[in-house]
Length: 281
Image 1 (tube, helix red, strand yellow):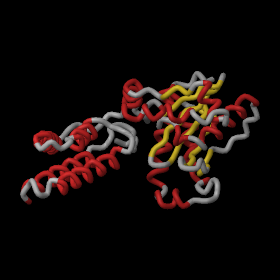
Image 2 (cartoon, helix red, strand yellow; image 1 turned 90 degrees about the vertical axis):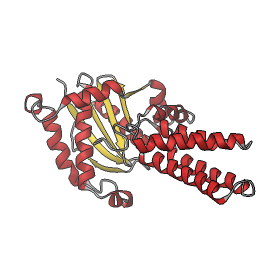
Image 3 (tube, one colour; image 1 turned 135 degrees about the horizontal axis):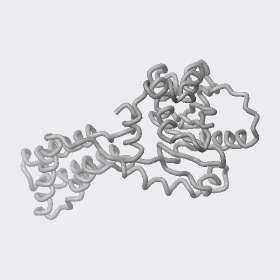
Image 4 (cartoon, helix red, strand yellow; image 1 turned 60 degrees about the vertical axis):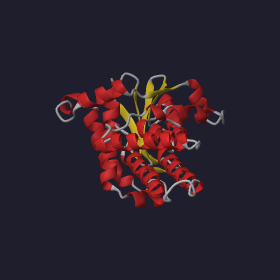
C-alpha cells in the first residue's frame, strides 16, 4: 500500500526541528530511513531545493524555501507528484501561520509542535486518494516536476549526509544557475541596450567594459549571489568613472552611473521563476 508515513519541518540554517508528525511505527527499516532524514535535515543548505532519496522500501522527499525545509518519508511506490504536492501544502500553511522572525529566533526543538495537527490532517488526506483527487490540482505540479525534476540523491550523497565526506557540497553549486528567471520586461530591455552602449563607449576610451558585460549577464541568467554581484559591478562602474573624471564631463559621468544604477535595479527586480524562493509563484 502506498502512503505517507512521516513528515517534519526544520530550519535550514542549523537543522533545528520545528515540527513533526507523531508516529509510533517501529519498523526497523523505517527507523533507519528516518535516521537518514534526521542527518539530511542538518545539511539541507548543501543540496538543491527539491530532492528525493531512495532507501529501499521507502523514499525521502524534501523541499526548502525561505530558510525552512519540509521533509517526508513515504513508501517507494508513492507517486512523486503527490509527495511534492503534500510538501507544497505544508509549506504554504507554515508560511501563512508563522512569522519569519519567530522562526529565525526559535531556540528550542519543536517550538511549533502544534503544526503537527495540520501535518496529520494533510497526511490523512494524501493517504486517501479518492477524497484527495477533487481537492488538489495535480497538473501544475506534474508540469513543474517535468520541467524541473527533483534531484536524485545518490549513495555518495548518503555517505556525505552521514558524515563520511567533506568535499561533496561543492558539486551542487552548479545546479542553481539552471533556475529560470521571470520574463524580460520593456524596462529590462532598455537597461540592457543602454548598458551595452556604455560598454561600447568604455571600450572606445580604452577602459575595460567588463562591468557592463557582467551586468547584462546577471540580468539574463540566474547565478549564485546574483544581487551581490550586481552591486559589485555597479561599484566598479562608479570607480571607473571616477578614474575618467578628467576625460569626461559631469553629464557623461552621470549618464554612465545612472545606467549602471538602472541596470542594477532591473537585476534586483527580475526574480527567479518557479519555486524559488517561493512555491506560490
